[in-house]
Amino acid sequence: MKLWNLSFGFFGVQIAYALQSANISRIFATLGADPHSLSFFWILPPLMGILVQPLVGAASDRTWNRLGRRLPYLLLGAAVAVVVMCLLPNAGSFGLTVGGAMIFGFIALMFLDTSINMAMQPFKMLVGDQVNERQKGLAYSIQSFLCNAGSLVGYLAPITLTAIGVSNLAPTGQVPDAVTYSFYIGAAVLILCVIYSFATIREMPPKEYAEYHGITEAQKEEKSGMLHLLRHAPKTFWTVGLVQFFCWAAFLYMWTYIPGAIADTVWGTTDTETEAYQTAGNWVGVLFAVQAVGSVLWAIVIPRFKNHKVVYALSLLLGAVGFISTLFITDKFVLFISFLLVGCAWAAMLALPFTILTNSISGKNMGTYLGLFNGTICVPQICAAALGGVILALLGGRQVSMLVLAGVFLVIGAICVTFVKETYPEAQDEAVKG
Image 1 (spheres, helix red, strand yellow):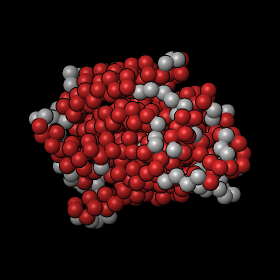
Image 2 (spheres, helix red, strand yellow):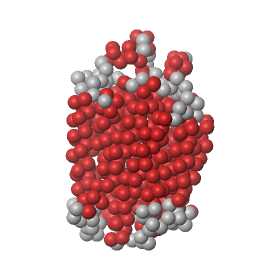
Image 3 (tube, rainbow, N blue to C red):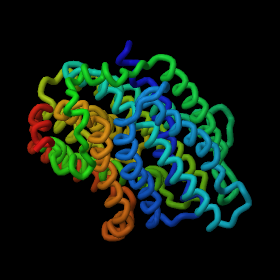
Image 4 (cartoon, one colour):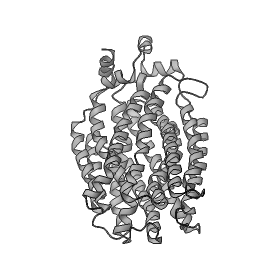
């Protein structure tokens, strides 16, 4: 139950993240964005992550007050996220020009990304702080399960609200009520999850934390900046980071181009003002929910593999098959098979990199290293987003081609898993001291 409580708040944070992932391209396309420029809006999430998460990690390593060590950052991030979730889907409803609505949405998205990153990072660090090596695989699998359960709620919210009568159409340049109300509900659930986290999580005070992680007085006095730690990061940090590069670039392209891709292949339209396109937008939520189900089921299987590398590579290959198959499927229900397979890759990406990494680093700089490691998630997304429009044009302009490219990236990621070598913190501590 303690392992569950450590990660339960992730459920609420992930609802917010899922609503963003499934609806950002749809929101900005509805506001009037050109498909070739959509990927630029996706630069913000990883850019905010690479700026915020290392700072949160390093600051929380040095924080202790009556609220705890990591939890104060959860509180601040969640508070900002709740406000912005109520503003972002209304970007086109304030009487602004198209350009003004785009700017407002862009700024709101920046704050949403910042706050979600601030709220998300504490849960990764809490597992690293309070769970031993033997249980970390299980702990991160529980986190993966809760993450995908939250995703399920976020992804299905718009189509569920549409089914009970909430409008899925809106005047030109405005976001449908089904999407807007979904963001409101997500904000409310996030508040409840934060309250639960504060009620059930007990963080170790500094002395107890030092004893648990074997941190000596001499080690406490050592001053290690981010650049110093990065230079002496264990090899595991970089090899897993290489895998991460291809994985997160792949998923960035999925999030960016899936609405237009399935609107084209299944509904036969790319016109954002048609009912068919908005129906496809709702179906994206269903497909992401299927992905979440596949990820939940696969997260149960992952701990049964004794070899992390084998299940890591296998998961990515299954995801690759799922992505590439979207090119050939024109039935919306057959796409369920594709996204169940994509879910296998997602489950591995949520659990295994952090299991492998936290086993290789000491508790003294856990938060800083996890914050820096977030760069292996953010940098590939920034690169992919910056090049998305160019690559789309080179591939003929069909958005489904970007999903095929995502599959190719996962195959490359699976090959890179062979370079990963798991290590343990003793050797890394010696390197940092040196």
